[in-house]
Amino acid sequence: MLLSGAEFDPTATVTATLAELDTTGAASSLTNLSAVVATNVTVFTDRIIVGTIAGTYNVLRITNPVVKNMQALGTVGAVATLSGRIENPTVSATYETIDTATYLSSVASATIVFGTATGANGLPTSLNAAASVSGSPPFINLGTTGGSAVLTAIVGSVSLTLNGALGTSLGISLSGANLVSTAELKITHGALTDAAFNSVSIRTAGGQINFKTATQIAAGVATFSLTGTSLDNSAPILIDIGVTGATAITGGSGVGSATLTPTATVTGINALAAATGNLATITRGGLSTSVNTFQNSVNTVPSFLRLTNTSTTAGTYTVVIRNGDSASGAILGTYIGAAVQPQGTVQLSAATLESGAALAAPTALGNYQLAVTAAFNGYVQHLSYSASTGVLSNLSAFRNGTGQTAP
Image (cartoon, rainbow, N blue to C red):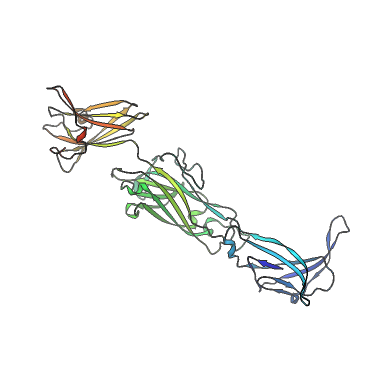
């Protein structure tokens, strides 16, 4: 009997039994069983040889061979096969060739899958190898991560799916813990190049696995070290990108991907190759702009702020008011505006902003710096109106200037 794709253990004790096939009854049966003496059975790494047999038999049964060195089965699709022949070595004659049969086939013991589609609760709705989403993931997870309050968006998940994974003991199915010793999860995302996106965490639905802050994210890449226990197939690992602190989002857009590179355990015969999957795209929508040299209500020609909603949905807006007369630009207050209807426009006077933001009433000429954000697409105009002359001026071109005398 010949073996290909693996090796027999020559030290193992193999039993050979001879028998005749009785087909005279309703069902076939074996008769005249006769054991082959152990000295007549020789085990080599690639074959088992049963020596000279005296008599006529229909069946030769070989039991208890030990197979080892199946490294080739680490490649999916590899097989170990058995074949044989009956021969007379004295005259170098082969009387019969036994057909080759597959002894053991290698299959994909596990698959690394990525997913980005999420439901209303932020959890993945499905896992597939080439998942992507058409829109931005919502920032819905407000909580504490790594000891800091953080607002996060789930941009993807990674999971280990087992398909009857086997180790060196073919009777024991492997789990993630003993199929993967350790693994590196590298997360790359364009949003991470924005200083506002300053945290990345990985977790299961039941709890956090690891967390990295801005100082641990290099050039838009966060790298995590995992153990096989983290990939035990009990739940997918969720990938969160978070915003914490008061840093303004200036970019916050980009695409991303994640690569999982596992290290196999010594018990696994199927080594997992590295796998890469897409992460959800983060896009920065809505309105964000600034208005400088915004004259306070004491001025004889005070400023007005006009916001126009050009989108198809209503949305609110926020105006952060800073001191425009000081290089510090200290925040004086925040005005929270009501929803602006689609294609609608709202106009606010300096007095309205001062009152709505609970600013101290100005007593002298001065100006503000405004930071305007809105949950809709549109544009902002900076206007001034002189009651004495009846002239309405559009100062929007001064929006990006600095200081009172150099707008």
